[in-house]
Length: 582
Image (cartoon, rainbow, N blue to C red):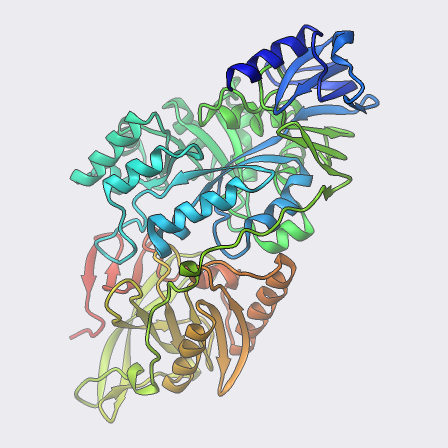
């Protein structure tokens, strides 16, 4: 705040200067004291709250906008502490759907932009965020992908990190995987130290860490974790001082599993709820953080505690001293809701402006225009069917295939004997044994070959750049010709997802911005996602949640066997394995 802004706030509170906006006759939800205070008025000057309670007569001016809450509940705007909205859909569409639901601040990862486009991509995203009526803040990419020795992305230098850390919208470091932290190399230690110099909190990914390993993780400076799936796991982390962000999103829903924590603790200040990412379908048909609030109340959390978890607690996780409450000096992010059960606001105020009424944004934000360089990140050459041959000697060969678990995103190893014809290892489509290739897009174009088993797919091919967290192009299919068709079409649309059967393209989702983000309305993206899932079923896919499941096939942050642009890896041991088993 500059001196003039501070002076205006003081004068408005004293009734010496008119407020820009006054809300009267509300039932104020005080998140500091967990009180409901009826008959409360709130005066707003600029982006800040100037006064709460009895507003002086002088604060009412001829240009002051008045809102009579008519006894409805006035609560702070919701704060999202951990999500991934830097892929698939655009920010203006996310804001259009989430802001009218009461979400006024979002802290998001930008791993997707960092991996696919490097530091310039992160800066472009920050500029897009700046233009939104929602308060969109960012955590800098941290050790993404989880094991860079296993795969390739755009590298970040310490100097680039230092430049990002100075940006006003960078408010922390994105989730760090505990094995990298407790066995750090020199760059890891340098990055952790740099984050502390800039007073930036470090988000953690502690799934699987317990006892001394969890202690070591926290000792490195990690401040939060969104990975607990049980109340006991949450309690262990709360006792070590971590902020626990209970995950309840489109991929994982852990709120019910962690909910018994409400009967195990008496102090909820370190507890919040976050989505860890939402789909287009959820945004269109359910909502955003309001969905989490409703479910938490249904699971037995006290409504006032739920509001605290989604406001002041969430803000505290990042040290935000002016977010998440209704009090003088706080940012004027507010919502008026009829009750504390379904949390459906009829008015939303962000930064002192009325931005939504009756579920509609006023007015919708304009799309940000990304530079041409963002559309040219996939500099690869087309591939012929012969490029997908697997040359080998002999008549048959034992290979090490990746078998995804049908119901989770874990993968397993399977040894399979395959025929060799004309010096090329063949697939067995009728048994869902497919060729699986990853192509390096960062630097020299190279193919790494593997096999996929057990997906149920027995025909066609799938090509995608939407692959956690390196975003390397992947192709798998029943025949070399179909794999070539799918990959070359992927290049034509500059990244995204393509599904083919024979010579026909069944479905596609163009993601030309970095190969990860669309230039289409969110509603059309949702329709294309549904067609992709339908096309995968047509090919025979049996995996649960297929749109996300196939994004994680190469993700080294999950066990056990993963194919990357550098080879086939056992994530548990970090060892590279040969595809052919002698």
